[in-house]
Image (cartoon, rainbow, N blue to C red; front, side, top):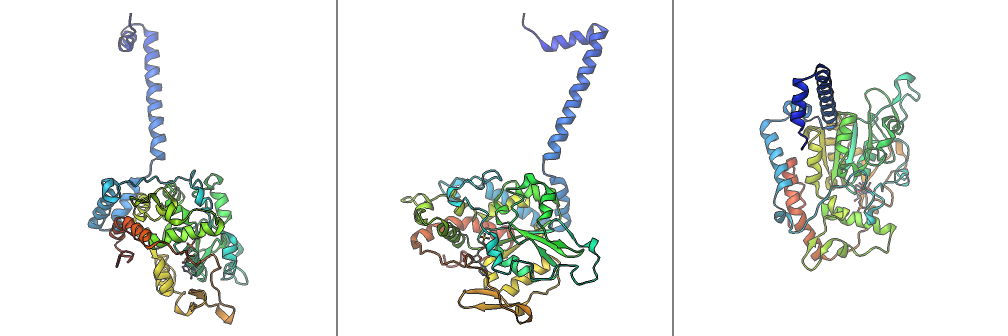
Length: 395
Ligand SMILES: Nc1ncnc2c1ncn2[C@@H]1O[C@H](COP(=O)(O)OS(=O)(=O)O)[C@@H](OP(=O)(O)O)[C@H]1O
């Protein structure tokens, strides 16, 4: 005879007091299990409810609808609209280092910031002052430069370090992508000491494209201020490639790496040098956890052209006094970039030789194809951010 669970339970309910009690006990255990499962799920899901309330407080309804609509359109638009054969897979913290041509995702090593002076340019808080020792402690960052790789993140951090109210870690901690398992105490230890009112910062450009990073940063503090330095994705891709080439001169030409099918002109969006430049897609992930006003987009091009102007925006975003101004910069013709004037008549500082490398010349047809590929993503990015970064003018 076929075993029927429903009939069996009915039988228990209808007959036998001991079995009846067992059934009730079983049901109670079942419901406890269900509640426990739900609690586990709910705690691991992003707290969108909290975020949406804050979003409502902070931005206008029309703006919210616009961003929500645009991001979903961007993500769910027909593949053919973007590129017939784009395959896109967001890297996770576990696989960021698997791109054979980009195995050094944590590119910005200590030697690079050492060239800029290494230590914080402003004095250690508490030193030779009447600030009590107890109030000078290591704190978790309140602001993070989360990207983009090769966008100009080192320049921005070094310019910020001039500010007496900024305390920043020199090297990239890579906490939210590679070292998350080490815990927040480990992360805090990497930060310089600061006093109340100072802004603790770090920069790790790979966070912007790491799938888990938004939830993890939000988990640390939903008030974290986020800065993204963006740069023309075509130039950024070439810069990224140039860096890899400098370490591995035997890699294939840019022209052959950038296509999945060169004769058909199909761009390979799975190559990290290309994928990182899909800014709209990465930004969308961060906007699921943080309201737009907590994210500042800095133009990498303007940071070179007008460092003081861009620094004005950054200081205002961080709630800092506008201390870093024109007087702090000069244009170094040899370097081809703005450099910092050292206050007090000391030696001026330019970024090291790994910043501002000469790029190899790339076939103009290839660059044009890449420009065409990025155009729809850039347009969405401009719409989402309300800023035209000018990468698609005259193209
Ligand atoms: N002031 C100043 N001096 C030197 N370089 C500057 C400066 N401002 C922006 N840049 C641009 O920064 C690019 C490197 O970006 P990142 O610092 O984000 O690179 S990294 O991801 O940390 O490796 C670097 O890219 P490349 O020119 O391709 O080397 C520079 O173009």
